[in-house]
Length: 123
Image (tube, rainbow, N blue to C red):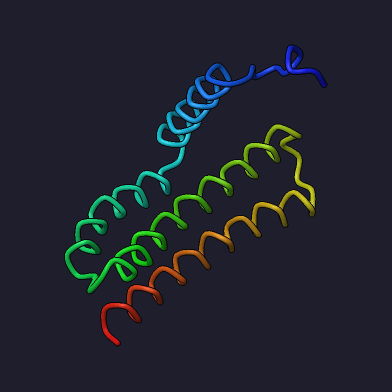
């Protein structure tokens, strides 16, 4: 594929197009996913707490990184759900499994974040 035929452009054009796609994704997930809104608001509350309670830069980074992980996994889960819903609305065992696995990933990310916060702040 030559550089002229790249659909998203090259250089700054590609960067701008990627930023537009990211903004569109953020607008979509904020509008359509209550779980993401709740997790994002929780992160907004917890980041200042992490900055205040983290004993050093590494602890602060781990606390905030674990919060970011939850948001990333929620975004991937929503992407999986969108792809499955695009395929069709009829029930299929693999479609259900894909959605359930995405949900499990979010649950594990939340549990992992809780464990990180407990270990960093209380041990």
